[in-house]
Length: 302
Image (tube, rainbow, N blue to C red; front, side):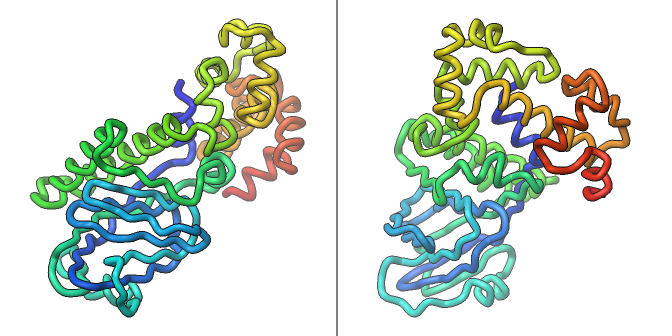
């Protein structure tokens, strides 16, 4: 399995499209810190994004999109002096899925947010920068542009199941943005995401995700990565932040946690499915990683 696909599925990634924004003239809209990961795409015109805690403003042109991976307030504006207005009342006055600010329709933005399960910050979001900006007009942005254009068509023409289709397309866009960010700035991320930028480490991550219950050894993993054991250990530690077997243990516990939250399987069955020979072996590892027993975790999650 692909580690990025695995984590997004484990986190129960969902998209939620929001009201579009049309703006013109001089305007400034102030947004409260969003829940989840916020995204916007400029479909017409240009504007400026300013995010709390980020030093530089980001100019946005038609075809650009961005992700806000932290719960921080932000401002979108024409870039000219204008009295800021709160986004709440602006979007409360929206008609037919479109909010308006300023005078005219020079700028059109579509957007929404992504929501994730409880483990999103540790598994994904904390390893990303606060803002990921994908500019238009580059080869890397073509896949994102395709997804955005498809979302546009769904929202404009409203065929049957258009909202569901647009939300699935938004998840496709998220995956493309993460891929492009990894390719463009591999050192700007950390943890397992950073490991995907190293060919040897990525091969080992894919192998462990494909067969997490297999009793892997470092020697077997090194052969898959086509490097020596010492080289794999060093590169894995440098990118992912821990050794390959330590990562495997944590991933198994993540999988066990998912089973405990979302199924009625017995602890013994879950233990076997994630690579532990007995319920007691899983319990020891689970408590070492999470600080509680599988039974207590299931009771708390329920």
